[in-house]
Length: 264
Image 1 (cartoon, rainbow, N blue to C red):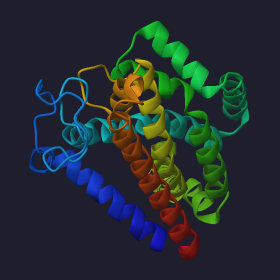
Image 2: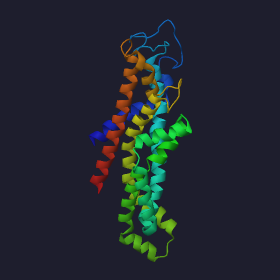
Image 3: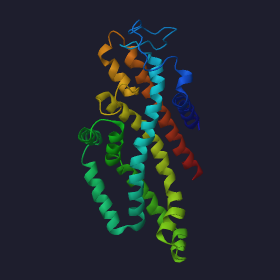
Image 4: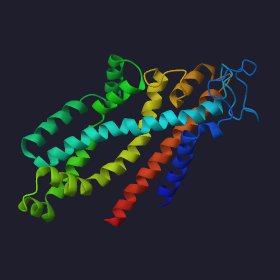
């Protein structure tokens, strides 16, 4: 319960920053102040300014909106693709299960990050192409988890009774199998959002994710990498934001998993 509460509190602050950044950020994130280039942290600029005089606190707060979008959409794609494939393979078995196994073996042959970078490099940089690449490369864990849960649920007596009553496959899957199998997948997805934040920031740092001048934590860290000795605060505070947000998702996912275990 402590992990659930602490993770929820951390993410509550991040969500607040994403929903109303204009109420928290003291400046426009794109405002150039050439009289305060790389100014150190002060009362006027608590996180300092970057090489263009932009307020680092404001840019860090506004970046929460983009990074939360990355956390949700980068997980939603693999979860939908892998969840659907695992649902069908776990329930139908036979040739469907065999084909899914061979497809998973093919995908996991390639290192995940290398495959994502290769796909984005082919499609071109940008958030949309990044989501497509993650969906192609990251569906395997969701398919495995969903397949295992569905296989257990499909073997229970109430599913056999539903088949005996003549219910169609779509009704059995939608009303009886999926609601009982999806909870562990959702808990895993929340934990996976922490990795999605790190991945999105990494691709932004490499220039393959969000593109400047859009405020995104990985982009902000990349902006400050050349000024670590002169103005370390440019990269420091966005990097801390990545760690804190990832910690929030990890704690929330662990708390949800523990709570489901207690209920079981």
